[in-house]
Length: 106
Image (cartoon, rainbow, N blue to C red; front, side, top):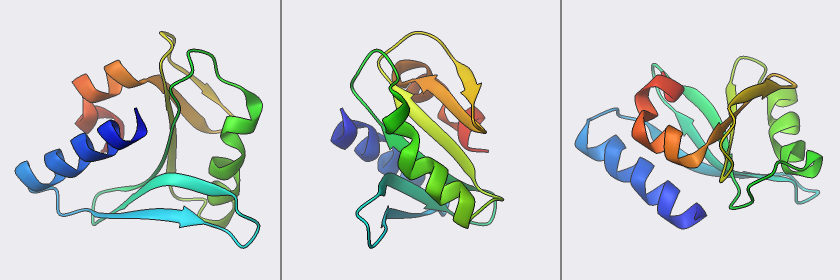
Protein backbone atom coordinates (compact mmCIF):
# COMPACT_ATOMS: atom_id res chain seq x y z
CA UNK A 1 0.00 0.00 0.00
CA UNK A 2 2.83 2.39 0.84
CA UNK A 3 4.62 1.99 -2.49
CA UNK A 4 1.38 2.34 -4.45
CA UNK A 5 0.38 5.51 -2.59
CA UNK A 6 3.82 7.11 -2.92
CA UNK A 7 3.86 6.31 -6.65
CA UNK A 8 0.39 7.84 -7.09
CA UNK A 9 1.53 11.03 -5.35
CA UNK A 10 4.71 11.08 -7.43
CA UNK A 11 2.67 10.71 -10.65
CA UNK A 12 0.19 13.44 -9.64
CA UNK A 13 3.08 15.74 -8.72
CA UNK A 14 4.53 15.32 -12.21
CA UNK A 15 1.26 15.33 -14.18
CA UNK A 16 -0.33 18.29 -12.37
CA UNK A 17 3.00 20.18 -12.15
CA UNK A 18 2.82 20.74 -8.41
CA UNK A 19 6.60 21.16 -8.35
CA UNK A 20 6.98 19.38 -5.00
CA UNK A 21 10.13 17.70 -3.78
CA UNK A 22 9.53 14.25 -2.29
CA UNK A 23 11.68 12.87 0.52
CA UNK A 24 11.82 10.09 3.09
CA UNK A 25 12.60 11.33 6.63
CA UNK A 26 14.44 9.32 9.27
CA UNK A 27 16.08 10.22 12.60
CA UNK A 28 19.27 8.82 14.16
CA UNK A 29 16.98 6.77 16.40
CA UNK A 30 15.31 5.24 13.34
CA UNK A 31 11.97 7.02 13.72
CA UNK A 32 10.70 7.79 10.26
CA UNK A 33 8.04 9.33 8.06
CA UNK A 34 7.25 7.57 4.79
CA UNK A 35 6.97 10.70 2.66
CA UNK A 36 7.68 14.40 3.04
CA UNK A 37 6.41 16.75 0.36
CA UNK A 38 8.01 20.15 0.17
CA UNK A 39 7.32 23.02 -2.18
CA UNK A 40 6.19 26.61 -2.37
CA UNK A 41 2.57 25.76 -1.44
CA UNK A 42 3.02 22.55 0.55
CA UNK A 43 5.04 21.22 3.46
CA UNK A 44 3.50 17.92 4.45
CA UNK A 45 4.63 14.74 6.19
CA UNK A 46 2.73 11.54 5.37
CA UNK A 47 2.77 8.17 7.09
CA UNK A 48 1.03 5.31 5.25
CA UNK A 49 -0.35 2.22 6.96
CA UNK A 50 -2.34 -0.67 5.49
CA UNK A 51 -4.05 -1.32 8.84
CA UNK A 52 -7.75 -0.52 9.18
CA UNK A 53 -7.26 0.78 12.74
CA UNK A 54 -4.83 3.42 13.94
CA UNK A 55 -2.43 2.44 16.69
CA UNK A 56 -0.72 5.13 18.73
CA UNK A 57 2.76 4.02 17.67
CA UNK A 58 1.83 4.75 14.02
CA UNK A 59 1.97 8.43 14.95
CA UNK A 60 5.44 8.48 16.57
CA UNK A 61 7.39 9.58 13.49
CA UNK A 62 4.81 12.23 12.60
CA UNK A 63 4.89 13.62 16.14
CA UNK A 64 8.68 13.95 16.01
CA UNK A 65 8.51 15.55 12.57
CA UNK A 66 5.89 18.06 13.79
CA UNK A 67 8.10 18.83 16.79
CA UNK A 68 11.04 19.62 14.49
CA UNK A 69 8.89 21.34 11.82
CA UNK A 70 5.85 22.83 13.57
CA UNK A 71 4.59 24.65 10.46
CA UNK A 72 4.24 21.39 8.53
CA UNK A 73 1.04 19.50 7.95
CA UNK A 74 0.99 15.86 9.11
CA UNK A 75 -1.19 13.12 7.64
CA UNK A 76 -1.62 9.48 8.55
CA UNK A 77 -3.21 7.48 5.73
CA UNK A 78 -4.78 4.15 6.64
CA UNK A 79 -7.25 1.55 5.36
CA UNK A 80 -10.04 2.49 7.76
CA UNK A 81 -13.09 4.58 6.94
CA UNK A 82 -13.07 7.41 9.49
CA UNK A 83 -11.39 10.81 9.07
CA UNK A 84 -10.39 12.71 12.19
CA UNK A 85 -7.71 14.85 13.86
CA UNK A 86 -5.53 13.54 16.65
CA UNK A 87 -2.49 15.29 18.17
CA UNK A 88 -2.46 17.85 15.31
CA UNK A 89 -2.29 14.97 12.82
CA UNK A 90 -5.01 14.49 10.23
CA UNK A 91 -5.95 10.82 9.95
CA UNK A 92 -7.48 10.02 6.57
CA UNK A 93 -8.61 6.84 4.80
CA UNK A 94 -6.21 6.16 1.93
CA UNK A 95 -9.00 5.86 -0.63
CA UNK A 96 -10.45 9.25 0.37
CA UNK A 97 -7.01 10.85 0.17
CA UNK A 98 -6.32 9.44 -3.29
CA UNK A 99 -9.73 10.59 -4.56
CA UNK A 100 -9.08 14.17 -3.46
CA UNK A 101 -5.32 14.53 -2.93
CA UNK A 102 -5.12 18.27 -3.58
CA UNK A 103 -7.66 18.98 -0.82
CA UNK A 104 -5.41 17.28 1.73
CA UNK A 105 -2.05 18.61 0.55
CA UNK A 106 -2.89 22.22 -0.21
